Length: 216
Image 1: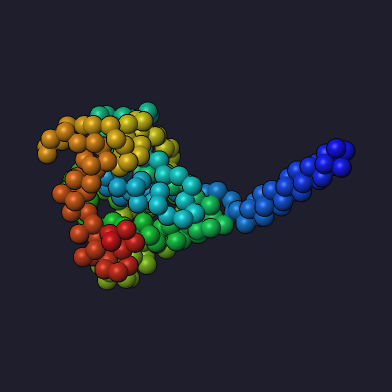
Image 2 (image 1 turned 135 degrees about the horizontal axis):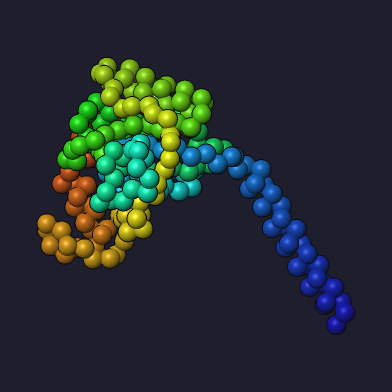
């Protein structure tokens, strides 16, 4: 019996050591977390796009760029609809995130994005620190070079980020039913209907071609 106990203990110890090695290996490959705040029109769409990107840890819909504190969806005058993208810099670089973002929007549109018009839907890259500012300016310059057109996406200092209400987070995969112009639909179905009707992917594909990362 003592032999079996010793063998069991040795087996458990071996498993624990193996798990510790795997955990340490994972930590060794993990890079520092970084956050980028971007404005690309409808925050539901930007959030959905970037939550599918390997290396992205989270994407949170919210507001930034205005003067008021604690804005809401119904009262966010002066603020952009934005998404805060948190990513593992060991798996995806800041430049890659910004490159993908610029090619998921129409950075030549000064009046909003697709069917959404007005200042809340204009595009912008918000920076925190000199390194993020330089990366944002580089992303804008590269987009202009690739398109051969004037880029109106602004590069702005990040002065605050305010998360949108809970019902706006992960809107694209919610099963809750809402009333739309096409009748009652789940939020997920309503999102798909909105995105197609707004022409976002069609416009992005026409503008960026095969460089568009999410247009399909």
